[in-house]
Amino acid sequence: MDSIKKYLKNIQKEEVVSKVKFSVVLDDIENARLEYIAKHLNLSRAGLAHDLIMLGVEEIERQLELDPDDTNSDYGKALGWDTDFGSVDK
Image (cartoon, rainbow, N blue to C red; front, side, top):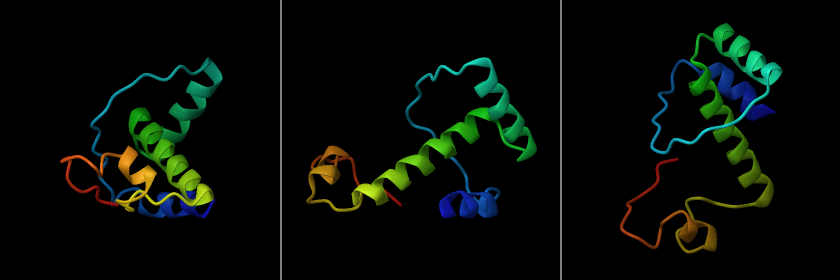
């Protein structure tokens, strides 16, 4: 949960750049929760959902000891390190 605390402290300093779009299905209560928290943090619902997804991904990477910057690992290769996509800033 430290990553959530860090996110809340730095929320206004970071700019979110979206390159892939997909839809997520939420029930009415989940949607209301997300909308309320986004409004409380002065964010868009989509922006908050993006940030929460990325926080979750980063936490899972830590738990599984996956390093997205390791260009020689299977994980790094799965992220496109073995192509000409360029570097991934972390």
